[in-house]
Image 1 (cartoon, rainbow, N blue to C red):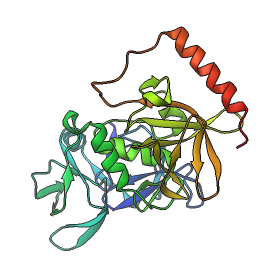
Image 2: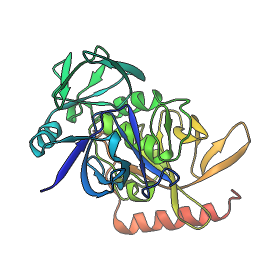
Image 3: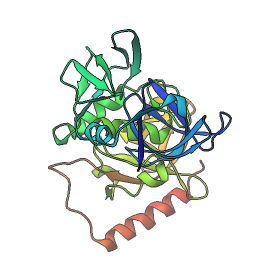
Image 4: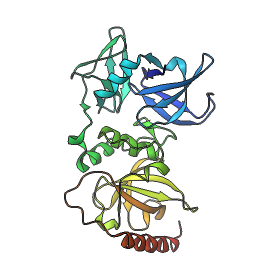
Length: 289
């Protein structure tokens, strides 16, 4: 029988190997679910994160076992915290949780994890089609502004590039993979930057042509992304231009659209897309990044 768990702490690391010295590849936030795939001794559990299927290792004593019925129930109905950092209250303690914390079967005040009852008085969002808008994505992204860069991070306390994109769209109820090289295959291609809209995702490549970074488009040719910290920079056909350093920091690969829009131009033909892609690559090769 499959074993399941929920995160009962504000944030726990998910590591590449069963060692505290190993790389943190992701995190579980309070209330997020996982399938326990393997147990190594009494210290470590190999888990599959329910939201994005990331597989890694978490310390067993930071996970709360739940039943298959609870796991299924917690998947069906939940709210996500919109507060940067606020406590949930139990009968015997307070537990500060970060934005994105998940409250199963939240009734506006109360929820429970296992046998423990909690209350929460902050703002929440119920992910669904009604909040899958470009305006919502932009507003949510701005809440992460100035969060420090943290490899493997998924919260305002520390976030990486892919984690920022995933966290924003998660709050809207849109599932995205954990890593940039996987996220780039989601959504529809935006052929020209002039056609891009706030809430689209821009992906960037390194000198070897590998997609390694992403950010969310804002208004007025700006982009919000995690680079040292979550920051806003200028975006053009070439990539991200750092006004402070007066140079390009990231080379644009492609822009993808995942959110609905009533005024998107008609999609280009495959031949037009190929020609556009080829011309952009030639243009990028002229730039010195």
